Every structure is written in structure tokens, then in C-alpha cells.
Length: 107
Image 1 (cartoon, rainbow, N blue to C red):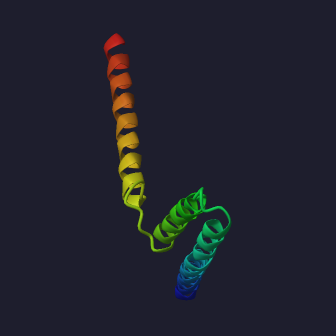
Image 2: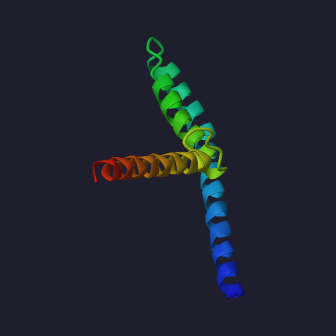
């Protein structure tokens, strides 16, 4: 029984390490390629700075990738899910009680 839980923990840890590694690769590519795009843009079409589109779009992707890799989600996280689940369960319970009380009054 204990080995089964250890196996799950090891797999979860491996998955987390893989996610963090993937983030660092993404960040490294971003830090390498964006300056190249800036140089290309400023060399060939200095009148229009199109590199901002790539820099901002990919930058947001890197930001969200990092947040996911390091389990930092300040909005809609597990706590929020749990609170919403409890809220909906409580609403359903109240609705059933209200329905039962109306049903008992008519009988």
C-alpha cells in the first residue's frame, strides 16, 4: 500500500520537474530570440516596430507558463474551486429544504 503512494508521489514530482524544466527552456528561448527579432526589425524596417507584438504575446505566454509551472495562480485556484463547490452544495441543500418545506405545507 505504501509503495503505491510513493509511486504516485514520485510520478507527481517528476511531472512537476518536467514542467519547471519546460518553463526554463521557454524562458531561455524567449531571452534569445526576442533580441534577434528586435535586431532584425530595427535593421530592415526601423520605421515600424513590429517586434513589440512578438515580445508582448510570447512574454504573456512565458508569464502564464511560469505561473503554472510554479503553481502560482492567484485567481481561480484550488481554494477558489473548493469555495465554489461548497457554495453550490449549500445552495442545492437550501433549495431541497425549501422544496421539502413547501411540500410539507401543502400536504
